[in-house]
Amino acid sequence: MKKTLLASAIAIVATSHAYADYQFELGAVYAQGESADTDYDGFGIGGEFHFDKVDTSKGPLAEASFLDKSSSLSFIFFSQEDDVANADEEETTSIGGRFVTATNVIIEADWTTEDDGNSDTDTIRVGVGTYLNDNTDVVVSYTTEDDNNADVDYLDVTFHGVNPLNQGASVAFDVAVGYIDTDDDSGYQIAVGGTYYFNTMFGIGLNAGIADVGDVTRDTVGIDASFFPSEQVELTLSIFDSSTEFNNIDVDSDGIMFGAAMRF
Image (cartoon, rainbow, N blue to C red; front, top):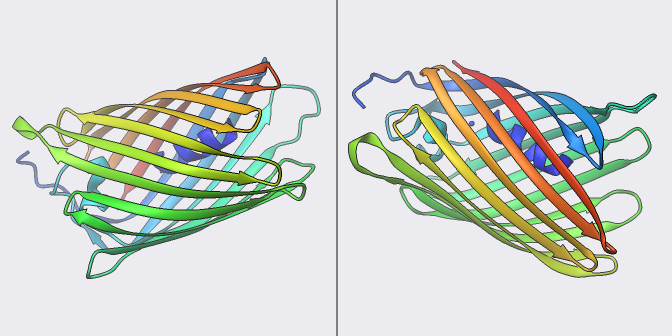
C-alpha cells in the first residue's frame, strides 16, 4: 500500500495558448485512507529540476517533460502515520534522475529509503531505455530492495506513450511487465494504465496492476486526474483500492491523495 502512495506522490510532484516554459517544479501532497481496518494519513513534498527549459507546447502540460525529452533530477519526502495510539511515523525519502542523450538514449537511477521506526528499507533502481519515436519510450530497469531481513530483486520493462487525437485531445498509455525474485520465491507483476486528455490542461486516467509471488497476490486499481487552472499550477487527485492475499488471508487497502504543484 505504501509503495502505491509513493508512486502516486512521485507522479503528482510532473491549443492556441502561449504556454509558459519552466525549469523547476515544486509540489505537495496530502493522503488519507485505510489499510487492514486502520486509518492513516500522510503528507509529502517533492520537486524536479530540469537541466534546460521544458518546452510545454508539444502536448498535454502534464506530459511536457516527457514529450520534450527533458533531463532532470527529482526528490520526494513522504511521511505517513497510522491513526492508533503511539504509532510511529513511516518516512520515505527518494532521490533520482532521468537523463536523455542527444541520440534519445534514456538513463534513469534513483535511491529510496523507508524508515518505519523499527527497521529501514533501502531500494536502488537503475534503468536504460530509448525513445522509439518522439512520443513513445521503453525502459528496462533493475531494482534491488533490502529491508534488513530479506532481499527482493525486480526486472521490469515499461512503455509510455502519448498519442494526439482530434481537436486538441490526446491519450497516454503505460504498460509494465516485471519479474520478481525473493529469497524464497519468484513471481511477476503486470501494470497497465491510460489517460485521456480532453485538452492540454485536463486529463483523467485509469490504472490497474497485479503482482504474484509465492503465497502473496496483490491487485490494485486506481483513478487519477490532472488539471491546470493556469500554465504554472497543477492540481491532482488520485484514488486507489488494493487487495493483498497471503495464506488465504485478505488485507484490503484504499486511499485518496490530493496534490498541488507550481512550475517556474
